[in-house]
Image (cartoon, rainbow over all chains, first blue to last red; front, side, top):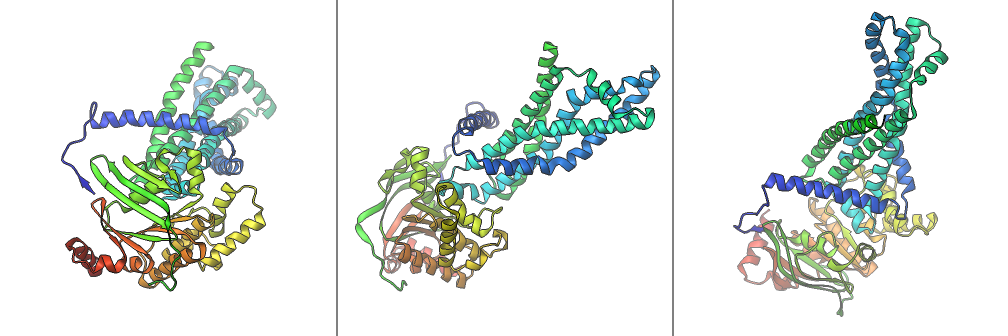
Length: 263
Length: 257
């Protein structure tokens, strides 16, 4: 290979041009996802396999973190409410906190770390070892098989995992309340769901769907377009987590603003 | 040297490349490549690393788009094909990657069955398994059917890679550095396998290599590439008895490594 002596020309600068090209590429990537998602053949088996990998394989971690989150949040809130003799409000407070904010956010952050890095590394590894090219030349559509299934699985599994996180979080909270106030589980859940509105559930579902889609798109995009050999694999995994988490927080702010304006 | 006389149809061109150019940024990789592959023929593209050999076959397989020039494969202009037409063409063009590119998460048997499952969904499992057995037998690795790619040696991975390509019964085979990184005995096995594929499956092939032994063993014609273009084409002995300084330099370089 030879290079000529002419320097490359940039519209603004190398970095800024690269940023806008990446943004453009990501939108094209998302557009391709929507074009391919309903086009046959539907990759049902691979989708189920990915749901198992993303959903079922995350359950242990989600159970532990969700339970501890609920338990610790209750323990932290108790002294403040006890000052006003309002510990009976704990179930309502916890349920609002868990369902509106903690469950979607904790689930998304855990999945961004565990699932996002996994998908980023797996696809990047397939890319640098030419496995994706091998699919392409075997007349197989690798985007449909690898990307669409993973984004779909993330989008479907996140709401389910979020519901599960909310449940185990509430159970963690119940454990603390039961040990201190001897409240029955029925009374706890009656009080907990008294102050939960449909909008809360809808907002949480929207958040989980958005976060799941974000994690899927970011990690698949970075893995699928990985370069630089094995260094690229580590970079794809790392950047998948960082960018997913960053976008999740941005989306959290936007969704909360929208929901609060509706409320 | 081959132990058989290949049946080459010089009136039937399966790949025709004309005035092909490809650059990556300021790197001019291909600079006016012309090539014709006839039915039943094995052409070896020989050249040092970075001369654009792999880029050439990736353009033929439609993995890269050329900047200029024509790439006609089995009567189709590859750069102008849409995704569906390109997929149909790829069923007839097999591509063997340098490291096999086996799917890590699948067993050897699943690796071979995967292209069939995707491209011939109506094929019965029994028939598919039979084809897998036939191809594994052809590459001499029947015993590895349940093994994972990580358990295979470099040579075995390449042979399975060739097998996976063969399972779709392609008319054209593109080999990217089939003997790179292998010991001399395994190289000979791979060279014999390439010849056996040509004889048994009547394929036409382009073999990308920098290995002169591979070139001599498998090529019906040799095309030497330097700085993005062919500097010499012909039979092995014609090319390497020449006094051309560039050719001698490459020959000496190869045998002093």
